[in-house]
Length: 552
Image (cartoon, rainbow, N blue to C red; front, side, top):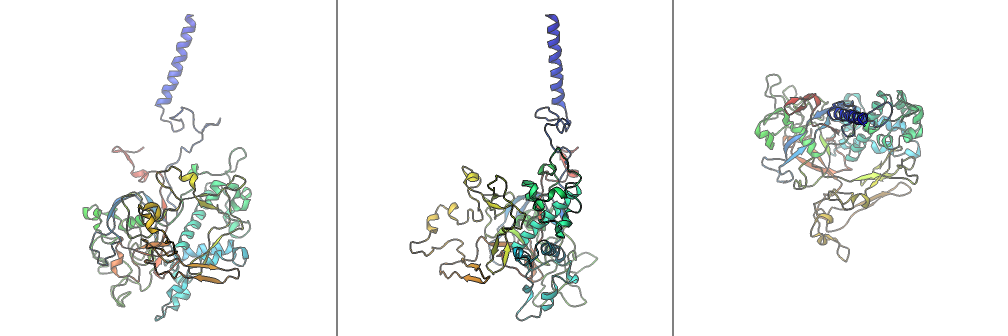
């Protein structure tokens, strides 16, 4: 009896010691939830415990988030009343150092032409739908044919910002860029062979790489030929594919939200003055003037913009902005975040749908108007639906045909009641018009319904509803809206663009200024740059502290 008692006491001591060691263990390979070993040879829970922080993707600059005053606090001389100041908070993100250049966009066009040759009837409109509109340079009373014929492709303009690109094309470029960058990341880490991307580009392998297809149905990538294109990480016993939990797959490139763009342009990180924090910083640089006040370069313009009537570049040989149309990127000093041309050169597309008001009562955190929530389409086999040859095209109001999805991408559908039922944070897929006159957000929605005779009553944003499509012969069929009840051009297809351009006066260089244009239109003064969300900590690891002490 006594021996049994001693044995029980010793067993309890061993257990207590084990629990204590688990409780006090700081090992990253021991679970604080269960005490089990993580990433053990025997199996069990597998986690990435070596992840440090998000890698800065090609072309991007880190922008630490924070609080700022969005909008314009100075006098509104245009009386637009569309940028009333509101205090907002932005999460940390990344943004392109420069605008997307002609050279960068030509990489995209070259890829599409090689992988989806336009002479193939299946792909006839993929390449042509991505081409910039070079005719934007034409002017009825101006001789601009040199830019019409040369600006996009001539090497003299290679590092100039691309123009003639509409909002839809800019979004599709960002999607393509996401896939190419993640493709090379997987190659670097050994999940793809070094020749995989070139085989797809040179038509030695059918299909191409899609990030979302790889994450959801990896065996479908490269049109199902991925087995022969895997790298050194290929194993027989464990999955051969990288998942999101590996930390290798980067978030998508995308257009910056209006709030992100304005925050990055203002670059308040360089000054802690109270007035700047409250939104009184007029330009991306310090001071209230557009000319350089420093000893070196004194009097030179700090951005490329129209200085006066008939004055796009100053007097030859004198101090000016050094350009008459656009200028080569990095021609002027960056702002305090290291971003170039956040004022002048070209205005830039943002992701947001335009509305005159910013509803900060609903959101003052990562404000964005434009959410359309989608989900992956599931096929009859219970797997995600990957698009092959059934490419869907859309005819834009100007008659241009663009591909909605490229072959190899996942088909997406709008979320339905299964995702929205009893939710308090959203109730529908399309939220572009939320709390702005749409039926779902107005107490008086019945006043916005159609009359019995079919005529529409006045709405807050009652824009024309033209219908444009192509018939079986490829002829554009246009049906214009002839209603007499239209009161505005604003709808869910107009997008915000920010910043001044080579065509604009200094007034538009203020980051708070905002304008809009239908998403299918392009001009010779609007370009774009990409952004990427940051996952994880707000600041870089090297700057992270814990209660005043430097982080380990």
